[in-house]
Image (cartoon, rainbow, N blue to C red; front, side, top):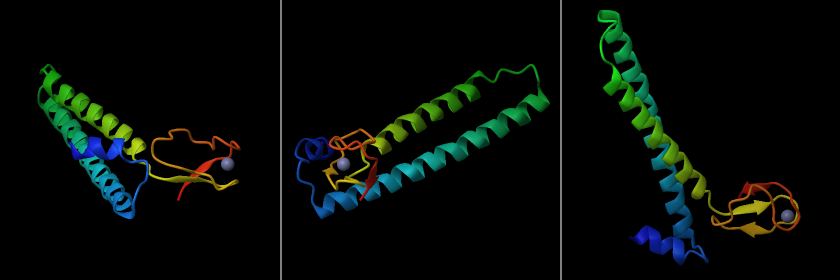
Length: 114
Ligand SMILES: [Zn+2]
């Protein structure tokens, strides 16, 4: 619940929030890497089983991969949403994490993470 409250009251973000974002980002990246490894393992599993029994039923193993891919997708979306403060390379305007566009709303230049 604290996370939701943070998002609502997050207009003025402090240093602690920024480092919280950084650790959230790291956690998500780790989780994504883990799911990707698991997908490879399950794929190897499917390969072994298929070799032993080409007519076998691999629906549940495939569903497991689909599940993990969905999880990776939603975690990637989450990563996108906690980009943090970005700054315009041209006019220097700062945008917080609620601003989702890649380009500056004032001059149209590309934004970079501060
Ligand atoms: Zn600008």
